Image (cartoon, rainbow, N blue to C red; front, side, top):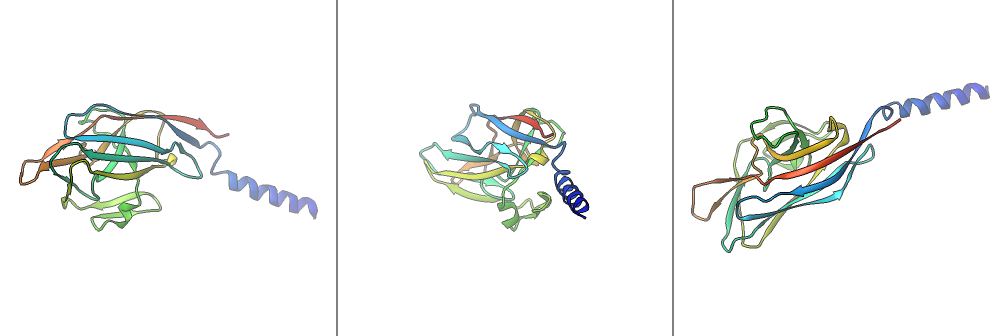
Length: 194
């Protein structure tokens, strides 16, 4: 009887580990923000580098109006950055889908139909969200990078989804919108689980 109980416990334990075996955990080893023409300063801080089974990696993305005048910032989905993803190539014409950077604000937005369990987006309304960013003011958002959404290690680039710019901006009183697309590189390393 003890042998059967022991075998039953061992079998249940192995079944619990089955989802972990063969998986890959990822670590964000570096984030670089290149120069970008435009009136904004961009910063990406690594809040949590490890995208592991227990939790996602987290990146805090912020933009600061470095001008002496207010700027209107426009995006869709959520403000200020909208939907962001990691793509393999900095080429803005690259047709391959990227890895969605997730934020809980997708679920809270009235402009996005999001499914939290699978971190998927059913629909994003194209309604422009416009707010003013005052001189020297900063707006930020924390995004999650889940390991099971990553296909392999390497260099990735942050882009908007469905359009590459992180945001669009215009001066107060102007109807001429300008795209803002800084170069943000994210380095990923993978570790295979036994």
